[in-house]
Image (cartoon, rainbow over the protein chains, first blue to last red):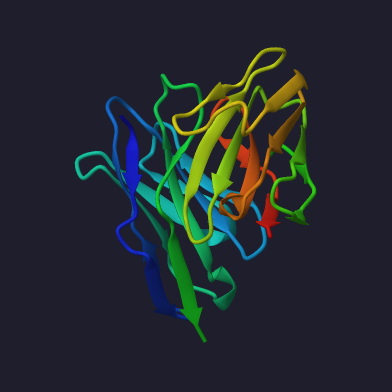
Length: 114
Length: 112
């Protein structure tokens, strides 16, 4: 069964510092991996995805993520955090052979401190 | 990216009543799903909405409680039936293209 873990419920970082939100996955084969962001009282917004190819993927709002097959990780990163990045971040996985529904991690609340 | 329109955006309902949530997607979407996000929790898949046939429900969710329709490719409804306070959640419609999935803004349901 496919699953994804976000080991940190909460990440705090100072504005201007680099940020990392961690995600590891457990799925056979070659997974599709995604990051979504949820602002208060809003739906989920797609940030980026890894399907195949270059392990470093770039997404919206200056975010990027690195697919690491040996460590089964897909950490979300940004070189310089903004206060407006404060939100709830979800990692998700889909196995290519599945019916396209996503399995979500538990979410990480990112707070960027001014 | 695909456009997913969901309504209502929020509602407060009396226990024992039912609420129907509507979801409209654009033509880029091939598959539609309904998720639930309980307070402080992650998203859990309720069911896959199948066009013109019964939805495919995940373990723990049943048609009598969450009837779903999808009469055509771009429209689906989820009904939360005989509501109780435990049904207070955000309900999200999702449309999936070939690779990524897109989400509506969600329906925040409070049952009192």
